[in-house]
Image (cartoon, rainbow, N blue to C red; front, side, top):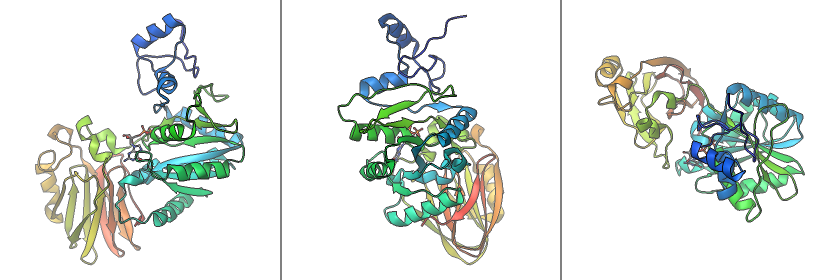
Length: 367
Ligand code: GDP
């Protein structure tokens, strides 16, 4: 068998088979790297040449092993979640993994939130979500890595709380952690050379470290792919519905009990009992929403999923939806993880549907 090759930047074993895993390097770049005596993986290459990091992904086991190492350090943790998919981006057991280290919770993708959302209220709400998740963040920031909104406030919060410690940035994949770190590199390192180094002791994981002014480092940890994501049920053409690019325009429907809303053919909402009320849907602006009678809804789905009801845009990709019923005592959001949420007035009984494996849940209303 061939001798393994290693990246001289981060020490990862070089591989040319899986672009989403650590050490990935295109075959042609491996040859060039060997010839020049400077073999970098693609991630380190981009970081060196363009001051740009790429997301790196690992298995669940490695991710948990790495996270639990953070509790042995004295550091500041920056925990990034996606405000469009807060429930899907929370890391179960995070408190145990980070130990006594303080956490700054970052709600990223604030540019997607409707303009009516008051950012201070969203932060209060994020704090409550965090508390339910078992953590008490010392600070909460709402940012957009894409538009750079409030990234400077986050940097200020990091300097305020850093107190001479290293900074670990954690988050599941797709929350925008790489985009955020790239913004930080741009804003804070300037012309300083960005270096990449070494493994976390006791793991096979390779970490990207970005020097901070006081000789400490900002350390990017790999993300783990969250299982049961809606994205798994969508073809590449339909993925846009679960990663909105534009600010969400909420859509309100006046519903009577016994009415159903289809969210394409990947989500469904039944209003079973309660007072006639406005129900607001927060989802990608292009997702087709169709109102029908609850009593005809099953038949309607069988007939029209993949045709009138899209996504999926092909009938072959239609999957059966699983039903989850809730009786709601306070004003809440019914969340179809990854797809969006629907506000539910207090005193209603509703049901949410999603492909098997995708979580459907009730949470305190975000707004
Ligand atoms: P990572 O897996 O957490 O490192 O996430 P990436 O940085 O690769 O981003 C995942 C996706 O989210 C990409 O499509 C980004 O363009 C998008 N994204 C990242 N940050 C933002 C943001 O602030 N707003 C919006 N709307 N999209 C973002």
